[in-house]
Image (cartoon, rainbow, N blue to C red; front, top):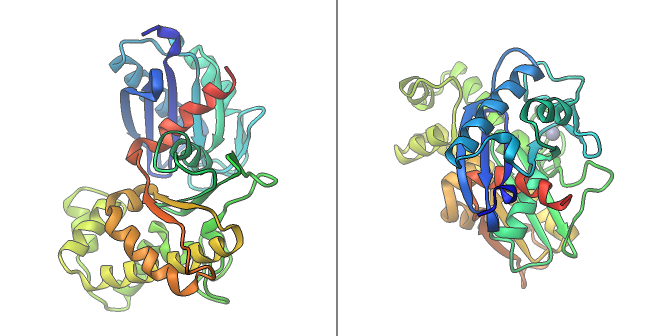
Length: 323
Ligand SMILES: [Zn+2]
């Protein structure tokens, strides 16, 4: 394989940084993961990303500078022209604008392109994963928050830059407070962070759950997807209740989006989506059906086929586009 066909991709998440190096046909040649710093600022986050790319490139037997380029899927508001990222609220000290592409490119010695994290994950599923057979698609990424991506007529629909914010579709007027500050958003019921805050509140009110005990046993500081899964497997009542609420919210929110877009398929990914898999996608579909206007012809429902690495693989496609 020619060295210059290898590309890098980084999924910059609120809890972890995932980096891959891919070769021809987007085959993964190396992959590395780092926790996202919880303190400091954009420079610290960039340093962790560089460490992850170095490791992934090392596995592929390459120096980062030998890569054709590196794509980053980032949260916050992304300027695709300059690669600057601002208002990444899930990342430490990242309120203002930071020239992410410029800084990373200087350190890695190869061009760096930045796109919206959820949109690049959707692009990845569309080009290489569960969305391949379709020309229209809704990607729903169920993790710390709930992000979305839209493909219409074979092309990403970005709106004016803020399209597909499916997590902030209102599922209950005047409902629970969302991390975005508004009320009744789907994410306020289904986002992992919102579910954790809810669980803490209910524990304070005297409810019992093993969620936080499991978290401590695993040496974690947050309720990860694996902890939620374990609690459900143990029949934890409060965890089941919160997941039921999440599924209902996802059903209502996704159905509302479908009533507007009528796409051919829905691909569900993200930490929780990938962890729970097809059985949970089937539950979400059942929760969706009562709200679906075109219920005689529901769309195909899939789990994200690229799995945990999908965001990073999708980000690597950013580099391909500019070849
Ligand atoms: Zn919201």
